[in-house]
Length: 111
Image 1 (tube, rainbow, N blue to C red):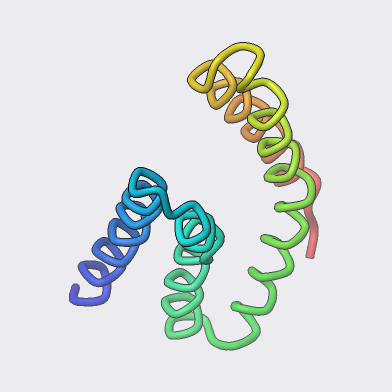
Image 2 (cartoon, one colour; image 1 turned 90 degrees about the horizontal axis):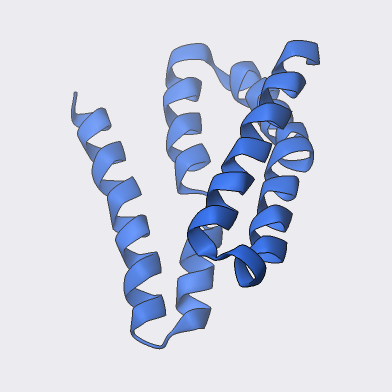
């Protein structure tokens, strides 16, 4: 149970750091925090402990390919549409794009 509490606080800490640094006029630190792979880091610690090194490696390949197929288009949609339709709508459309592409990727992904 301690591991789950740690994961919860680590994820929350990074999220707060991203917003705090951006609001404080420190965009470089905010962007660095946003790029930090906190979710995969914590997940891989748990996956490695439960499933071993091979499970971590297989999951990393899945995430790498999924990033190209679903995450990059999501970020492009937010980048392109935010100044045109507003942040909230752009994020929503980006998430819809991500979910559709992620579901297609998951359906066809074979290891």
